[in-house]
Image (cartoon, rainbow, N blue to C red; front, side):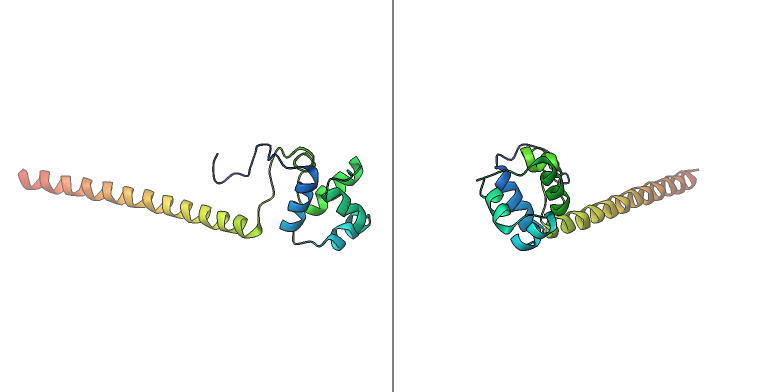
Length: 127
């Protein structure tokens, strides 16, 4: 798996576990999440503890509020949510890697140019 891509396999968790994980990573309370999706705190708590399951329309709303795909929420397949700090760190590191690759290309080009000039000087000195 490429470290720059999100998790793309079934995580083995339950629907309730995925709801809880996504809510925690979104830094939302039970109260805020329940209010945003139009259910009681008790209903959301039952979903998170796998005592009941949301209807399809609530899964869609829940996925939107939590910033995850409905497919991941239902089955654990697809892109899993990542902690914000990790996402920022990955983006920063990716940018730094690209910058270093660009510098490496520039250095290689400069070395090749100097080698060519050196070869020209050596040939001129031998003539």
